[in-house]
Image (cartoon, rainbow, N blue to C red; front, side, top):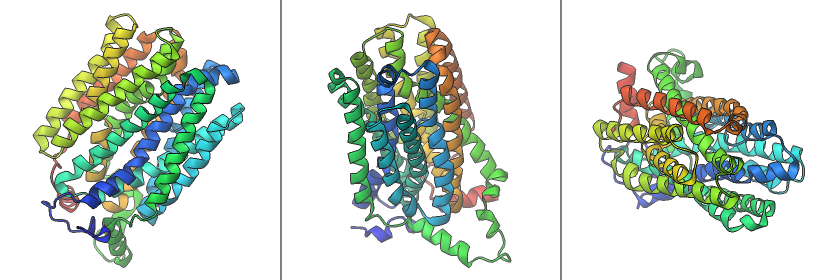
Length: 439
């Protein structure tokens, strides 16, 4: 068996097999995605109940969604955590930020007034934002070249499993009203603390250690170093192209996914298309579809070459676009909602966050990888935060305006992703970096 300290060493043979340690490390790192999506959906499942209990208006509901793990709070955390992960190491970030997350979740679970609810939601968002870039960089850096998509795909399965567990709990506890939602948040508290305890045994990314040692040993007389490790280097040449491309595909996709994730239960109940329990059950079904498609489709084909990646992306982009066109053609009823959720879940599994995670690791140098993802992840969540202020107001006017905008966002993401997708499948991170530097 491979020793933990050997996982991710550079240079890594491009044909290296996936070991048990790779899977174990991916699960622990992927819990960031579980807690990220779980907290988003828990808040979404409880929005209408918090609104009723605390007397929140539509504007306050939008503000709550905007400052949390779905948006602005996450953006702040990603920008800070991504950069600190590059400067201080992945382990220092993912080892401690879950304690901050746990404190925020506890505040939300026990909230008895609006300030507690808002403060806890913001803290949760910051903690999640800091964790995701460091955790994904860790997975990307220890993954064998021929299994990077597969292992990063597993983190996306975790991103789906978190909401599934949260929504099933919310459904089972729906008769308890707001107390049931408080219990759901308490579950996230327990998961965060257990994950924190297990992560304490994880080693630092070996690729980051090697890159940091080389950077420290470099002098200003060394060609290209250490200037190449400065954040400003992201805004020129191949790095800038990669930054713009990953930011575009994720920003516009995330506007649709974020809206669906946090507002679907709220919109369904607000527009009287179903009960609270029904809205939660419908949302849960979409995450089940995503998990199954990622596991059976994305993880199987993501490392099979450039053509396979573009084919998956094309299928997914068309499917998720059609999901919101349905709302423009048919009435907002439960059968149409089900069709939308299934189509978007299927399409998003093939042309959504999973690929964004993969390309965010492949297209940037090690000492700028977390910074780059912190920027793109943060910008996407910040824009979603601004958008979230308006969704409840738009929803009160009917589903049409929201659906039309989301369809447009998905069309942009789909076209940009397909037309400008780089050929990086199956290549080591070192080989990709060298090729892009010479391009």
